[in-house]
Image 1 (cartoon, rainbow, N blue to C red):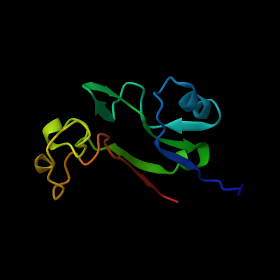
Image 2: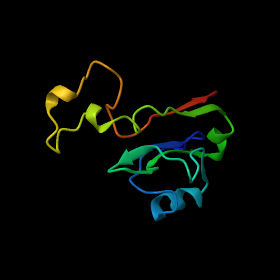
Image 3: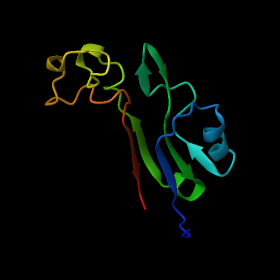
Image 4: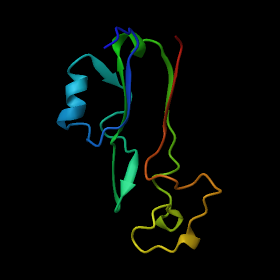
Length: 112
């Protein structure tokens, strides 16, 4: 490993807020701006949060802005990029930035 004062763990951790992987980081020096009751994805009509940006204390103090931009998760399945369930490919319009994922992006601005 490399000794680095500013550490962020980000992405789809495939675990809900109270599950062991997220709690491990929260109990070992990391903090999250994603709150327990915030959703970042919708699947089969259920919403939840699997997406995180976890910061160590040094970096957390440098966060200037955090946003969860909600435009993917609640889009109609008719606009979905996923054709696994028999949706016709003509339904999906890849030229527009809607429903290209079932997760909403998390954006953080830090001042280093």
